[in-house]
Image 1 (cartoon, helix red, strand yellow):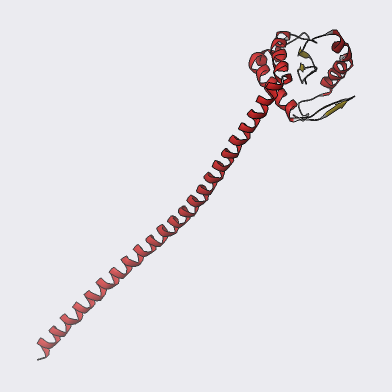
Image 2 (image 1 turned 180 degrees about the vertical axis):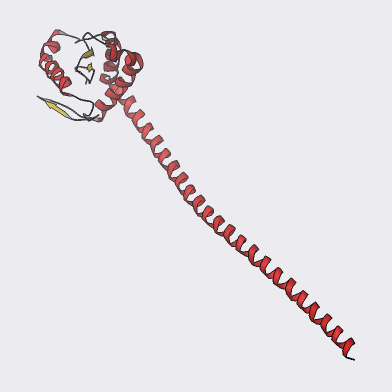
Length: 195
């Protein structure tokens, strides 16, 4: 269940958007966590890891569902407010994003949404498995094509060598024929002049 959402700029920790609490009771109990999150935002840098686990009191934030939730929210926030982030000068300048945050929170809190999300994750895993098989097939084809190219290069080199050898043998055969003709001619000349 998503209790609180805050979005901040990494460069200076400026909060850009946050979820509004549904009731006062949960809002009061989460003030400490909001303050901790603000301190954490100020300590983040561009070199900070993209994903991490944070333990704070009874809450641990590291589950796959949480990362899926955050990735979906990040992509939507970037889509809606990405160009505005560097120019933001005041805290919560993107507070209108709260409507999307609330919608996403309800979706992830709803049991049917979780079942739907589980089914979606299974479908994505199937697609990922199929893509990996396709990539393996392409890599195997690439290896086969590489072998074929090596063999073709070898055949080309052997063909050129055969062509040179054939030219050499043709030239040798031509010289042998000329020499034989010269010998026959010399024998005739010697035979007519001597006898």
